[in-house]
Amino acid sequence: MAGFNKVVNNYDDAMQGLKNGMTIIAGGFGLCGIPEGLIAEIKRKGTRNLTVVSNNCGIDGFGLGVLLEDKQIIKMVSSYVGENALFEQQLLNGELEVELTPQGTLAEKIRAGGAGIPAFYTSTGYGTPIGEGKDVKLFNDRPYILEESITGDYAIVKAWKADAYGNCIYRHTAMNFNPLAATAANVTVVEVEEIVEIGSLSPDQIHTPGIYVDRVIKGTFEKRIERKVIQQTAPSKGTQ
Amino acid sequence: MALSREQMAMRVASEFKDGDYVNLGIGIPTLAANYVPPNISVMLQSENGLLGMGAYPTEQEIDPDMINAGKETVTASIGASIFNSADSFAMIRGGHIDFTVLGAFEVDVKGNIASWMIPGKLIKGMGGAMDLVAGAKNIIVTMTHTDKYGKSKLLTTCSLPLTGVNCITRIITDLAVLEIKNNAFYLKERAPGVSVQEIKDKTDGALVIDGVIHEMKV
Image (tube, rainbow over all chains, first blue to last red; front, side, top):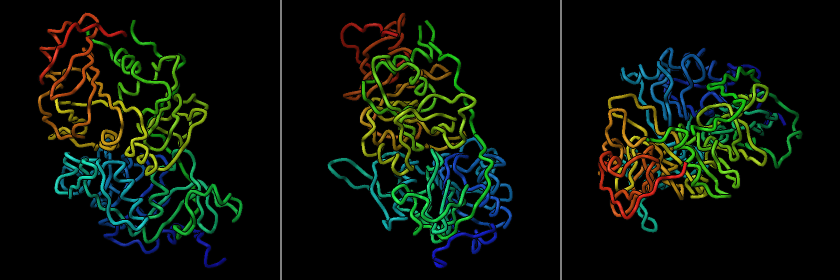
C-alpha cells in the first residue's frame, strides 16, 4: 500500500520539484475545474519562466491570471485568452508569448502526448494561419495538417474525489481538460474536494486511473463563477 | 426591413431537424435555442464537454461546476452526458455533430470563413471555431449582411485571417438566406420588405438571382 499512497498533506510537498523554465499542463475551462490551491502554491513559490498549457489563462486576479502578476509565465499555449487585461498588456509589451491553438487540437495534443503518440493529422486549421508551415497530407482527397503532441513536466489537475491510489472522478463540466492533463506530464498533481476510502469508488466509474497520478492533495475551493446567467421568468418571444 | 437578432435566431432554428445534435456558437446562434420548433427535438452540444445542454439555472440551481462553452452557468437536460474535452472534439471533428451555427466577420464565395481575429486589434483566440468548421456536417453562418460601417461581409475573397476553407454552404443574414456554390452566393430568400436590389447592393461577392425570390417566413 505505502508505495501506492499518493496523498500529500501540504502544498509544499504537492508542488515539490517544480523549477524555473518548466512546462505545466493545467486542467480547467475558464474558471471551472481549476486547481486553485496548486496555482496559489506556484505563485507562493515564485517559480519563473514557466510555459503553461491551458485552454485559458484565468482572469485578472483569479485562476492562472494570478501567475501573470509577477510575470511568472513566459509562454501560454491556449485556445482563448480574452477577458484578461494583464494578459493583453504583457502580450503587447512582448513579455509574454502565446501559441494560440484550436481547442480541439489542444485537447488532442494533450491526449496524444499522454498516450505516447508524438503527432497526428487533423483537418482543423488547414488553410488558416494555424496551418502555416505545417506538413500537409491528403487522406481521401482531403488535406490535413500535422500537429505535434504536448507533454509537460508537471500537470496540475482538479478532481472531485480521489482515493489514496490516485483514482479520480470529476464532477459535471469541471471535468473538461483535467483527465487529459493528468496523463501527459512527468509529475501529475491532483487537488481534490474529497479524499475517499480506497474501494469506495466503483472501478468502472473512475475517470482517471491512479497510474497517471503522482500526488493527491485535499484542497478547499472558492469556485468563482465567470458568467452567472439566471433563467428568465419567461423566454423572450422575439419581435412580432 | 432587416431582421432583428431574435428573428434571425428564429429563422436559423427553422432549419433544425428532429433528432439533430446541434452546436451553437456565441451570440445570435445561441439565441436560436429559444426558437426550436415545438414539434421537434434537438440536443445541444457545448464543446467544453456537455451533450444535452439545458436552460439557464434558477438562482437555486446555480452550480459553478456546470457551465457552457461561453462560461455561462447552465443546466444539463434530462438524458444529458458529460465528457472530457478530447471526447467532445472527437464528436465535433469526427463528424458526429449534425448541425453547427456560427457567427462570422466575413464569408466569401468559396465558402471560406473569417471569424476569430482582426489584425491590429487584440487577438482573443479561436476557441473551438476552427474544429467546428472542420468537422460539422452542416454549418450555417448567421451574421449581419454588412458591418457597422455598411461594408458587405459577403465577399469575393475574405480579407481577414481565415477560420476554415471551403466549409460554409449556407448563410442567414438580417437581409437574406443564401447558399454558396460554384464560386457564388445564390439568393434563396429575402427578409420581409427587403428588396432584391438592396441585397444586390450590399453583397460584394458574385450574387446569383434565379427566379422569383420569396420573402422568408419569420
